Image 1 (cartoon, helix red, strand yellow):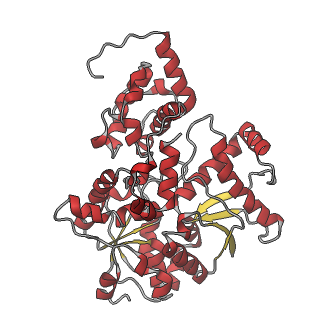
Image 2 (cartoon, each protein chain N blue to C red):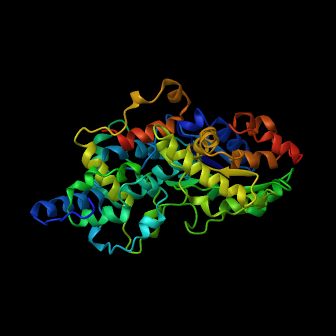
Image 3 (cartoon, one colour):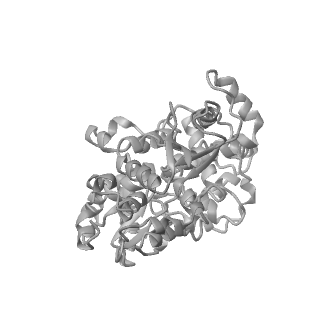
Length: 297
Length: 135
């Protein structure tokens, strides 16, 4: 099955390991993710101000590309757009939701967009995790060659995969999609209360202290609950919970670093796709010693 | 702002209305249960709790624009998920930020961030912080 796929800026730069492992894992499950031609930045955050029109331009242009792919015959009647980055997912999905309900805003956008076809509102924005759930985790389990036996994984959702209500991939109060996936991969799930707590997000640019405090709370709680590794789905959460562990270590004596990986890296590992595809050497807190100790690599 | 007497005038009304229009939220529905403040993960850094910001906006107290709170909000939508009155408080925080940003105010000055840092930070963080904190 072929799907339109939107990578976004960070999957092409600091999160290559997320994209590589995701595309290979999807392929292993019979899904071909076709990168959108000529995509642009989604804007990273949804335009919350009610009178904002301009910041809808970037996400809507992305959605027009999906309709273009169908017009050009690259896809046949498949208007589902698959995302990986939680921020892209949220921004595209919310912009899509707003313009579909607001013909006046759509008309204003069409007045500004000169080189694009008008957006017909046919696109459905999805996260890869939703596609996996739809496929069925028993199907995912069938593909596993090297189960993550004995690996205690804490799934971390952060904010934008779950909130605001109605725009997430799962129930914001008790999500289970990542838990189900990890079980399907043969791993042990460690549920922890801070799995949907904010990592500090964009404060990482000039308020590292805020992020370090958030990361400390989240990661030390995951450890306390028995986790050995954290799995997530957002390249900004990943930076804040991995790279910023250097600050956490400096500010909170006694903190023990913990590896943080993308859920797709665990998938690629369990599917036996090879260490190169997993890109484990790019994770800031090296997960390889732990995985070696469990004979998983 | 604690302990100050707030005199309600037409001017206060205009401020409230502007926040309502920009945020699209029914601010008067807030009955001060404090759910947003207990859900917010950032309160340790704030000078006003989110519920207090809501109250001051209801009263049309413009001094709320001087608060640090909207700039500490990381738009995680935890407050909105908890509000029993269906208010998206994150939208209200955005409206307050926008009121200042639209007067050519920049909360973030990139030149204060070191070059090494800028090389290391993922693009998604830079773009989102510029979207949230600059005019």
